[in-house]
Image (cartoon, rainbow, N blue to C red; front, side, top):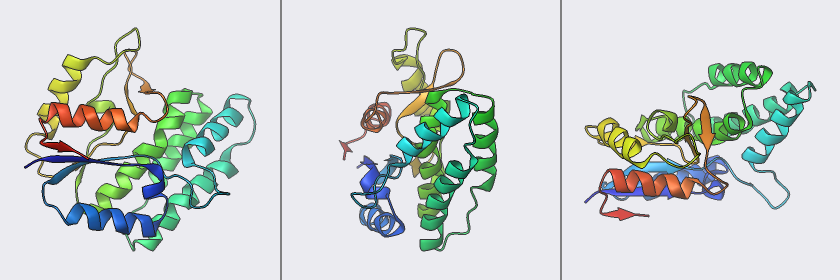
Length: 203
């Protein structure tokens, strides 16, 4: 039995939610491939990390100061890391994001970092391999999914990995830069993983 499981933003919004997700995955050894969204709202008054990233990048492209908002996002992840007692640092990743925002690398890249970072986090928490979606999901020049290349690359990369995390929502565009699906695209990522790996069930 081989299962792919996708978890939405509210399921991964805090350390407590992460623990629930961990319990769900560990309860069934056949849940082998995990597709996470970015952290969602912790309360009704909270802001989703993806929306924070969009706001942060909008400041960057207008030559406004964006580092304080980026630091807030970093703090969100550190709060989860501390709550899970993980030996993990995302400092290098945030340094790269800061640099790339300064270069105005693109809104899709900016939006995708929520899933990318959450993927790193949940992989460390579960002890699973981390597979960057930009290395296994590909788009064509017209913006549609390159299904054949994606399925083949995904299969080659995940075969041999007993357990892996593939972040949702994004892949690699024909120009070599990160490209996202439309909002809610993590569901699509999960179906791509399930199809490529011929999973028995996609949850």
